[in-house]
Amino acid sequence: MAAAAARSQFVVVGGGIAGVTCAQKLAVEFPAEDIFLMTASPVIKAITNFKQVSKTLEEFDIEEQPSSLLEKQYPNIKVIQSEVKRLKSEEHKIFTEDGKEYIYEKLCLCAGAKPKLIFEGNPYVLGIRDTDSAEAFQKNLAQAERIVVVGNGGIALELVYEIEGCEVIWAIKDKAIGNTFFDAGAAEFLIPKLTAEKQETAMACKRTKYTMEGREKKERPIAESDKLGSALGPDWHEGLHLKGTKEFSHKVHIEILCEVKKILLQQEFIQLQRTSLTFPKKEKNVEPDEGEDGGLKVDKHMHTSIPDIYAAGDICTASWEPSPVWHQMRLWTQARQMGWYAAKCMAADTLGESTDLDFSFELFAHVTKFFNYKVVVLGKYNAQGLGLDHELLLRCTKGQEYVKVVMQNGRMMGAVLIGETDLEETFENLILNQMDLSAYGEDLLNPNIDIEDYFD
Ligand SMILES: Cc1cc2nc3c(=O)[nH]c(=O)nc-3n(C[C@H](O)[C@H](O)[C@H](O)COP(=O)(O)OP(=O)(O)OC[C@H]3O[C@@H](n4cnc5c(N)ncnc54)[C@H](O)[C@@H]3O)c2cc1C
Ligand SMILES: NC(=O)C1=CN([C@@H]2O[C@H](COP(=O)(O)OP(=O)(O)OC[C@H]3O[C@@H](n4cnc5c(N)ncnc54)[C@H](OP(=O)(O)O)[C@@H]3O)[C@@H](O)[C@H]2O)C=CC1
Image 1 (cartoon, rainbow, N blue to C red):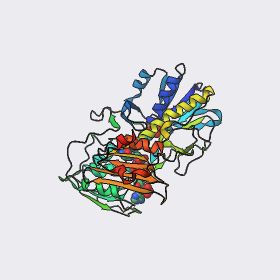
Image 2: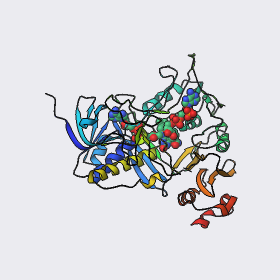
Image 3: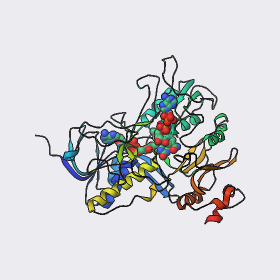
Image 4: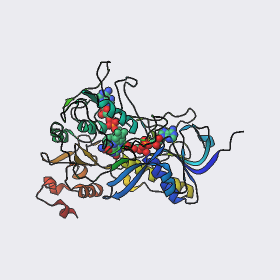
């Protein structure tokens, strides 16, 4: 006879940032309940040293940890390490790879996304998503003289800068590099860094940090399935020796307006990287509504179209009417914010309370590092969705800083800040309060005016 299904009021699927944050928040809200955290990976991602840098910018470190540590810190979290294979939503049941079944009252899906690798199966094509794929890339690179990097997203941007001793042909569909994060002007500002010799010391920078326990020590448990590791994140390349066979630092050739259609097998190693997202296969009997990007649609309470099933992080597509200066991007900070907020909504629904959309969804804010510069992007930093009805203010000091502000009807809608500008908090406030700044004109970026004093 099959063993009776274990039950829990709350079940969370996924040991990445979204799932772990969701389980932690539920564990605190309901100390008398057991929270089941199901994950395919033997390690979980934990946030440490969390700091709210400003109203919406946040800074934290990430650690891959054994799940026993999470259970020790949160005694009512039970981590179940097994891949979820099937979901029967009408019966509120999930089935795991090891043949067990679990009954939930409320379920949050945080299973992340998986890379959509073009030309999958080609032995010369590698994608980067998790620790194992990054290490496989490192190994191949060590024997390479020339590689091709395809894509213009965050991973490609970081990769071309980090790779040394190997010729890189960088194929991008667009006219300028990095258009996911900034415009052609910022790209011009950054490009000299690709041709210069690399400095050894990294610039101090407030941003998320990523560590993997035991990476150097080779003690990391190996995931049963290499397809279901968590997505890497900030500083994923630190500690990886991304070096080819040659002695030079950078040699990058950028091929613009280039969409790769076909890859022919050659006797050379080609690296191809593209991680636009597809989502874990849904079972036949589970058909939650999907967004255009294939994610699970969630409403403003992180609820999917299926009763009692919520979703957070990379797996979901935010389908509420967003604030005019927020948009979804599959980033670590948003995975944390969504996981936390989904737990809050699950708790409120359980207790019959109402919840307002969390403040973190008021303004898009991201701090990162590209080419060793601190990069802060706020609001509609690329004038996304503003059409032609906007103007740009620019300030640039070669090699030092690049500041771009997007204005519409005298209001600040977005900004890109590269370098140590110290403007993020002031601009964050100006975007949030939508003050009419018409009177200031270009003085907004006048370096001789202390803008902080103006508006504080
Ligand atoms: C190379 C790389 C670099 C990145 N750099 C940055 C960066 O610098 N800054 C930034 O903000 N973001 C970055 N990102 C994006 C960031 O990593 C993701 O947005 C974030 O990790 C998503 O978190 P998540 O919890 O939603 O999903 P994930 O971290 O992918 O976690 C998903 C979890 O679900 C588990 N799982 C999957 N399927 C199942 C199943 N069927 N059953 C049970 N468990 C399952 C997995 O094992 C995993 O534990 C980067 C991504 C990549 C790939
Ligand atoms: N520092 C940071 O903040 C970082 C953040 N991340 C995040 O992690 C997630 C995954 O990163 P990533 O995979 O870089 O994200 P993206 O999906 O943004 O990048 C994929 C890139 O590949 C391009 N592409 C796809 N197919 C082809 C083709 N056939 N020929 C040429 N180009 C092609 C896409 O162009 P198109 O869009 O036109 O299809 C896009 O520029 C993202 O959410 C990203 O923001 C990642 C690394 C660093």
